[in-house]
Amino acid sequence: MITITDKAKLKITDLRQNANLDDSYFLRVAVAGGGCSGLSYKLDFDNEIRTGDQEFEDKGEKVVLDMKSFLYLAGTELDFSDGLNGKGFNFINPNASRTCGCGESFSV
Image (tube, rainbow, N blue to C red; front, side, top):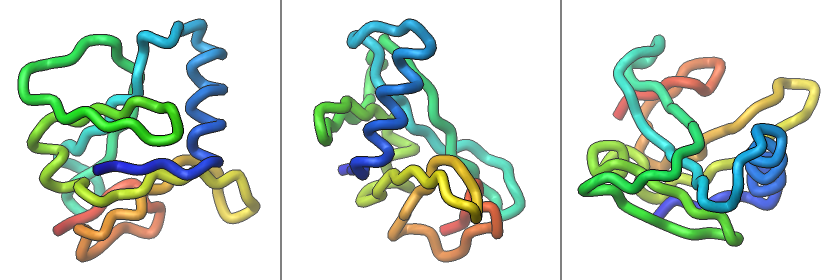
C-alpha cells in the first residue's frame, strides 16, 4: 500500500485544480531507471487504468502504480515539504537501501 500525508493530499488537490483536471484523474506513481542512485520516482496525473495496475486510496486520493513500481514502493509514504530546506514531494520508502542527497532517486 502507498499512503499520503495530509500535506501531500493538499498539494495533490491543488495541482489537480490548477491543471483543470476533474476527479476522474488520479495520482500515478512510478519508478524508472535513472538518477544518481539508479532508480528515480515519477509522479503524474492519469485517468486510465492499465492491466496489472495496483490501486490504493488514502485520504480520499486514489493512487495507482504499475506492478513493477509497486514491488519497489510497497509501504511507501508520500509527503510534501514546503520548508526552507527544499520544496517538493518526498518519498519515505522503507525498501530503499540508499537515496541521493536530493531525494529524487534511490537504490534497493
